[in-house]
Image (cartoon, rainbow, N blue to C red; front, side):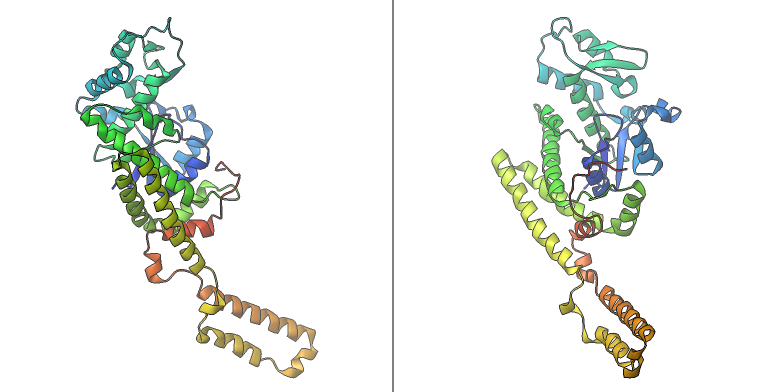
Length: 344
């Protein structure tokens, strides 16, 4: 099971709801960034810079790893040939939107793309690549990099349409299953993880994960194992049914945990009521003639009541160990879904 995630297809992680969910779920989120950005942090957009500075996103430099991927260029060329056929595509005959990709990510692939008419050289470091090929390449690159042991990250994207780009060839069926798993994961987490009513600062997200991050491995083990089984199903209808079943089961358990975290008079033991009774008995009848004494007694009673209630607020030891406890805390502390779509 992978504990980290690698974002694609772009350099900058998007400022939207998907990012909140992703930062909550994974221990670490990385993004594929050219090494030249080390000296040019201003090339990143403002939101991405803040994520990096807060330690929420790590920059991954592909030049450090591509040499460790066997047949990296050869397998991608085969993938393009399967997806697009062997007919030469000329930009002059077929207008296609192009995406700019840094040469550091491409290895020795640019010559093939230029020869096929699928890209043009912009400068020494950058190529404009036909959008379908560029998207296919970034999904492929993220899958390859994520499989390297020292990275060990699941490819993730806010644009699940990229999942349909894989297919064909026995070695590439692994990528197809992985992306079915990603689809199932995205649907499950969208249904379960909250989006705060108010804008959430990066500091708040960091603090929340520091408090409850120890619960994440159990949650991921549950979600990833079930989504892996879903991805093995051949029929799309069966995958949908299995995904909905996982959501329904999880929601029921999360609701039970959230309910257990609410103060409840029925759960207050007699021992916790003793301080309340003692406070009331300590008030002499004559003291009520004084407004000051009554106010003081009332404040003491309220404070003691609050302490008694908060003493039973929370999950038991066994409940804390349940895989869905992390989501229950998120539901309680980060509130419920709303229109808010960005982290500020």
